[in-house]
Length: 142
Ligand SMILES: [Cu+2]
Image (tube, rainbow, N blue to C red):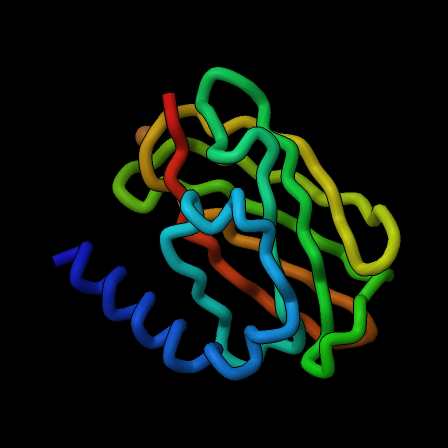
């Protein structure tokens, strides 16, 4: 049941975003670890995320690199960006951090996935009275 929901969300997400997604290029190394991306309704921002290492591993910390743009593809450099790491299938406890601006609409942060398997990287951004949220479903290796 749960996987059907995820597949449906993935399909909706792809259908809804395919036209706007052409400009912001994701690093190809991340494409295989990102299973699906869900943009919150009325989100004021587009987000792309990359991991180092890629794929992320439970045995070491992961560096996160987020590219934040507005809906006209302009970089957003003055946002507050928060990330929550959640396993959809079980309670792994609170695992949240803030990302720091690195210029040109890029934000960076470091955290650790505490288990291998499927995780949700839930990114919230706020700037200039606007906000946006995107969830990246990713697969973490041992
Ligand atoms: Cu777990």
